[in-house]
Image 1 (tube, rainbow, N blue to C red):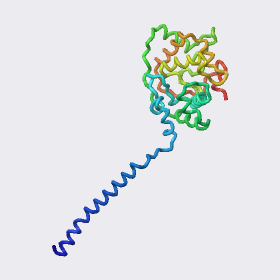
Image 2 (spheres, rainbow, N blue to C red):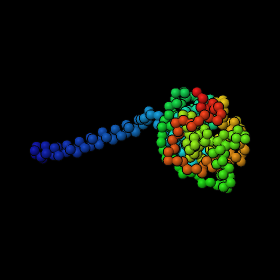
Image 3 (cartoon, rainbow, N blue to C red):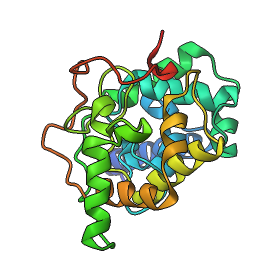
Image 4 (cartoon, rainbow, N blue to C red):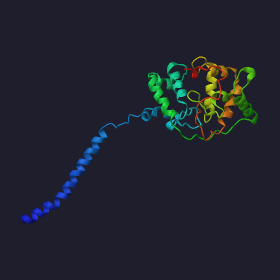
Length: 246
């Protein structure tokens, strides 16, 4: 082979050598990346991923299970419940495990994050009880029973039952199983709030049949298009309530 031919052969081979060299570098970089731990963003959305395992993506739990929706709930209410789980007023081992070592500031940050989410609600649950049961439930929700000092739900939770900022939750868009369980826990003392515990007093007066009627009616109601909690209650609360006192 002549010197000219040899040089031409070397020149033609250089691009392939470059390609091979680039491929080797790229393969090495992929191999190095595979051995490095993935970088997780340090954001509040990432930190609360554990919450969404039970409460659904971004806290928008569907209404076909026990776990409630937390997205869009008033920040004060969410914060109070996290504190109650941490401090033993509410008893659910998994929640206690998650929050027992968290500070007030961190719990407040979690509450503010979920309160700021504005997501669609799932369809309401179809009623599975007779109409007279639903009518009794609606009467208690709308009017209460003054003869037994039971105020209407709407006196505290708002006429539209979507809650009142910053501390009173809405009652719509929640699974009936969850509503029954919580009223039952208040009635038996398993769930508590800061004294004076107004919900414990109300639940103590309700019979099991009335709890069934109220929860059946609430779970069957559609959530209004404006589902956000109202800014303030239209009047004074019907009884002192430690969950809204500062």
